[in-house]
Image (cartoon, rainbow, N blue to C red; front, top):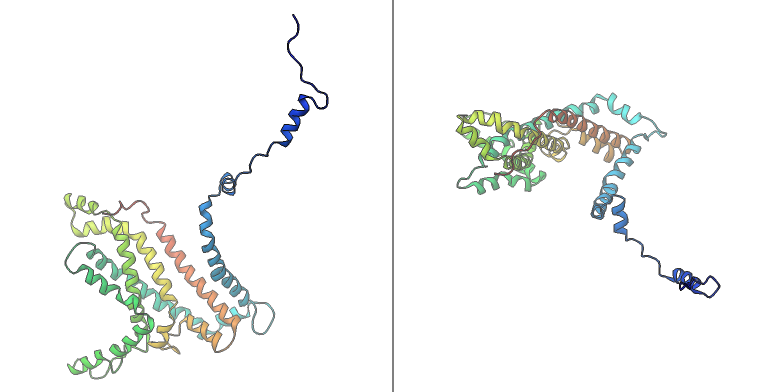
Length: 321
């Protein structure tokens, strides 16, 4: 039987050459898009939305911080060393600012957190005038430190309304010093910090399911048992976070220490020492060193609170009720 199959021609110009020419002239496969290439490497394109925030943090936080750290090791006398830190820690007048600041920040933060708990717990329910009361509690957060200090001077100063009222009713014979001292700054920190703590604790309380309390009440648990055995354990991690944030705000006190305090004595806080080193002594290295010490002290307190927080309940609060 004759062979009816034709073998492809391999001579130049034949069918094989035409096939090779077709393959070489065919368009190349399109390259994968950038999105697909990033996905192949486990990078989600949505992460690019974080880029502006990252640039913002690098430019306005990371770079100034690193610059300040480097500047703190460049004393005014020249060279590189720990002279600025040594000057701060060996000077009792400068080193004492840490303790003075802690005496203000810790009590203010503790009071704001503790005082916010019962008020936020009560406002979790429904009653007439709730919105008005909540608004009155958070109004001071919009006043600003300077306006609060001015109000304290008018109300609690030696010639203020409080002293005039107490003198008029015969409770006191001489005006009480409520401002331009330690108490004036403490009152200012409480007034400006309480709304912040109240809002945070209210948000944490709103995440605790009320059905947990109702179930405990059906089992015969009184209000005290329900609060200490259910609400407080679930709320404790939020209280730790609230304390840390309010402590940082109070520790950086500056205007109040000057306006309603004693900036040369009892309320010469560490931020004021850093400002004086910068603006009055023109010792930028020392000012940077004090700022770094200030940050280290804050981080030390926050670390202690975080360690305590890690021992608390970390499960679900049951969702919003």
